[in-house]
Length: 370
Image (cartoon, rainbow, N blue to C red; front, side):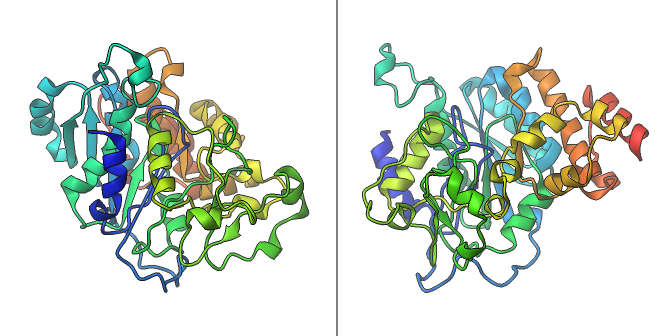
């Protein structure tokens, strides 16, 4: 199953809009794409959409048997959403589907690349190709019965209030791929990354500082949705994306070759310091959220911090930086609760459904603040 086959079938496979939201485009996962059957006369930004429910989403996650606890730890934010988890151990899939169907989880198998010569792999790591296949597998399984697809690493937390707030302005019937944490020249996030702004975005409102920090490249508002030609700077219709790699890089390249570009929601660009206001895996928010108990007790989340958390879309936990994957999974519960506390007050009971080793952490957070 070669990648060029996947690319050639992308439009036929994704008949309804698939917006793949990523914490960041790198490594094992994090690229995102969409196509739809909508008319090109429509605008990507529309009147406010009906309130999104859990049934309007599906989630696609790629993991490995050794990291499965991380993928399951994402229940901290996706409980109630249909989720496809693609893993590396074929023998355990029947058991996983039997035990965890109650969480609306569907497990499928896709092998690591086993070609003896790594130079013949599709990407750097043996599991990267599985990450590129996961969103296609999710759409194949769930069909057209959803509006948006959330796609990130197995240690990514999505903040659903921020997700819903961002998506309220977009038409799910259009082929949209949304992120403001994009690669360029081997780094991310980069304002130089070729992308579009939403249709109708007023670029005259961009602060002068924005023009000084990105070598005068200003993304254009694209109507009805972002294409490769619209993402490229004027006079450079054949520009190429650079830097994204792994499963993300494969999906991004596939989209690019199919003629689609990413849409930057534009929120960060309206500020003098845009990098401090990125919605996907914001660096400022990352350092605050790294110590959820300590920050809540001390009360370090000022008004600016609370605004950032209110709009935040995702946070990459980086599970390998923890003593163990189970501890990283437990942290995902804590960071989800902290974001709710800081951004919108104490969570309601239905948002704190936890079990096992996560309980003590969550109870400690609630007892200190609520």
